[in-house]
Amino acid sequence: QKEVEQDPGPLSVPEGAIVSLNCTYSNSAFQYFMWYRQYSRKGPELLMYTYSSGNKEDGRFTAQVDKSSKYISLFIRDSQPSDSATYLCAITTSYGKLTFGQGTILTVHP
Amino acid sequence: DTGVSQDPRHKITKRGQNVTFRCDPISEHNRLYWYRQTLGQGPEFLTYFQNEAQLEKSRLLSDRFSAERPKGSFSTLEIQRTEQGDSAMYLCASSLLWRGQVYGYTFGSGTRLTV
Image (cartoon, rainbow over all chains, first blue to last red; front, side, top):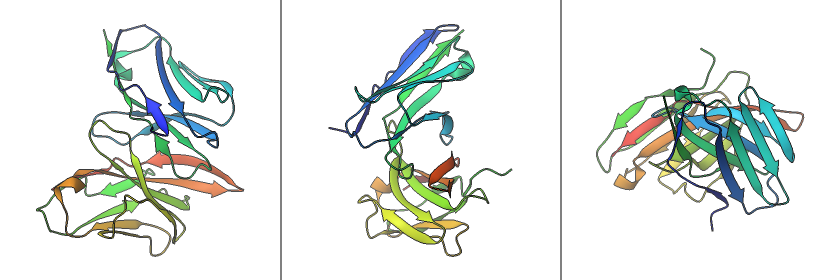
């Protein structure tokens, strides 16, 4: 079993939809939780990070962490075609070495 | 541009050749990381440095791989006797460790290796 599981999709939604992306993890020692966005042939770009259970909001993005269920989510409101990318969850124990999910490919069509 | 810079962007080599990649981190950052990413997968950790000290290496980093960060600034990743299975995107990231917290975990655009 992988330490971090992420549904690879692909996920296709119409513009304006709410997108939900999810990861589960197995190691309860994980403390820091991040979401990255990666466009084709580019490096990952940090979108959100959090270290506690609950919600964190930044513009159209909301990160949610449930440590009791070992489950993290990223919600994108009012999705735009420019949000089309691969979304990666990344988790770490000491904010050093990151363990990534497989990535979910998202397409937002006009 | 004050981001993480990687060079070259793309390297094509023949099996058995040696290759070297360079990473220039964000200047204020004292931690530097190397990851490898294959198609359809998330990045996998290879190694990381705090200043010039290499603190952790993954089992993925076979003895054909060596990484250095000689003066705590830029880093190089060398692969000797390349194999087809080494074909991947090699990503560098940097961050600042300050008072026990890590800030600004930023990735470069990567070096794509084709063997």
